[in-house]
Length: 315
Image 1 (tube, one colour):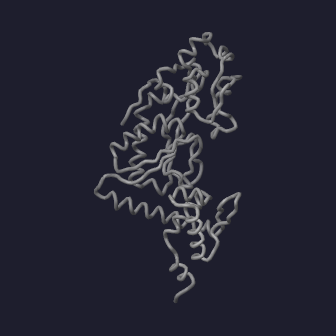
Image 2 (cartoon, rainbow, N blue to C red):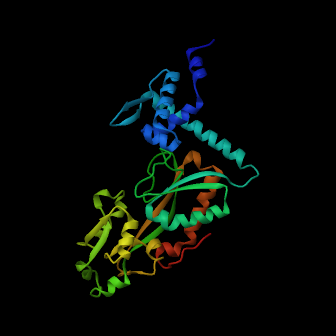
């Protein structure tokens, strides 16, 4: 018997579901359009056609909140997301049978680690695996795996809920740094009390994306930051220009001969990075290969991460 659901299915364009997923993840038709490489009107039209085929509203639409999933949309997104993962897994198995690892991976990371550690490591990774294309997102904010902003994420905080696979990637140290020229122009710094008369470069506290970054006041009580920024790379550059003292990750500062640690025995912090991905992506061959590569690269560079070496090593 031919039912209304059969009729809806016959009108359904499966490619519309890809547009639906992107809008559900970004909550903006304009953002989805950018990710899909089309214009806004195409996305809006596809969503309208899909809703007509399904016979229900999938989004509540407003100028202020964008596209918010309705109850029916929330039901559909779970099925379509699973479909996408199944197709990805099937393509991965077929494409990589008897051939070199191939495919596309997007990895999100904190800004400093992404630029100073991952970028050179991924360059070497692609030499070994030229059929894998990589998007690197080194950003000063969290990257959402749920919204598929990335396939892999390296973050300061351990994922506390959700369908994720994660592992501790590495510990890393931070120390107080300044240029040799800056230190030569100032009174000698012998104890922490001598730091009171110095300018610091640090984060904008209320805009820091993780409490793990708010270490200046706890480490050097009373420290005055004359220059504050949301970017650790901006802090690094300002310190190189003689802007003052800054607490920087050793994997950044130890590679720069112009920077030297100040009171390294007294001021040293340890933080860690967590590597995570969605459970449904973990078994994809390209994800597995990159996951293992990053863990090996971190272990190979333990001395740099700890600040006892200024040399970046490659797998």
